[in-house]
Length: 173
Image 1 (cartoon, rainbow, N blue to C red):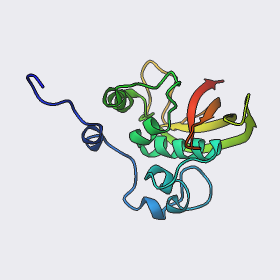
Image 2 (image 1 turned 90 degrees about the horizontal axis):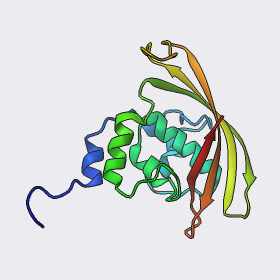
Image 3 (image 1 turned 90 degrees about the vertical axis):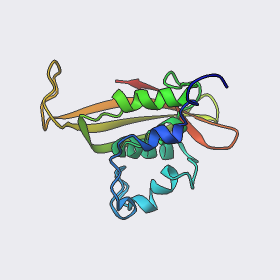
């Protein structure tokens, strides 16, 4: 109601954003490093056909989503208590598109640690490492084209009433 255009819909905003997902994504090796094709591994999660039933599912699929720039999946798998969570999903998607998708890096490898149970069966932690390769020299930064950087994080995951797990927080080390 009122003047002006109706607010933007998330799907419309996302459709205008670039992606790194290959046209033949379901036939290529899954970026998470499982040794399976994307169609046999993370694909059904990213398409919404399957929900994450383990914290490892969340971590592997979010790695793939960051690798291929699937902003909607990152939003959908972020728990509402996470500091990154935003009620305004359109603004959140625009912020991720602008600076939160590691565009100056190539995702090289995910090293997944063991799941650790938290205070109860609905909380879990995983330590992992992500190897990124700088795509170009970055002025004012230590990134040099071709140089690899390893990021270590201990992530917290929470299981919801629907039995699906989501990312709740991370401590970068």
